[in-house]
Length: 181
Image 1 (cartoon, rainbow, N blue to C red):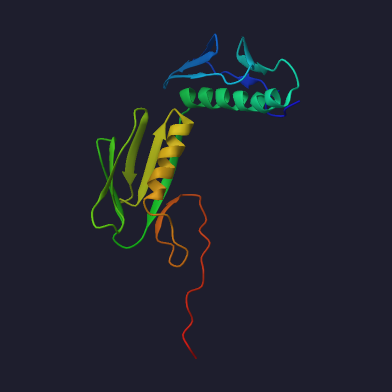
Image 2 (cartoon, rainbow, N blue to C red):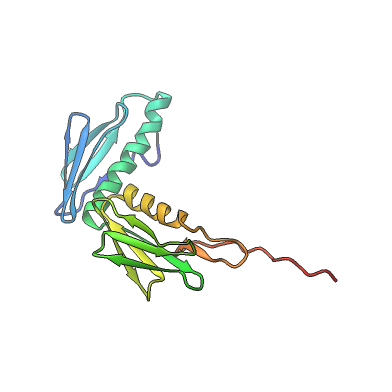
């Protein structure tokens, strides 16, 4: 039995989960998320709980069991509490600016500022004089993907540590060249 898949999902007050056919829809105070259910896993909704049930122990069904449970759990958490990622910009002259929470402009050593438009459902805020970026939204996948896209504009380099990194990310530093003795 899947350790993740067998756990019931606690549905907080104010959140409703509805399953219609192969689609699950979760509504909460922060918004609504909907997604198709992969595989043949069934979701059983009861009072305050959702359970993922697989029909048999085939390899494919065992793989989808934990996946479906985790996807629905992420949807429930997203519409009730939301998700956020923080990124730090390290480097002299590197900074970020935002316009109305939908456009992010990065000055990170390129010949021109790099501008990124946030998709629907993801908002961006720049704090601490342009060196801390906070991305937030209800869809965990979107927030994580946008954070990865922003980090990819200037990933941290190992010698001075300059670049864009997640706040809790540790960058392994290398020793630079030693002079000829």
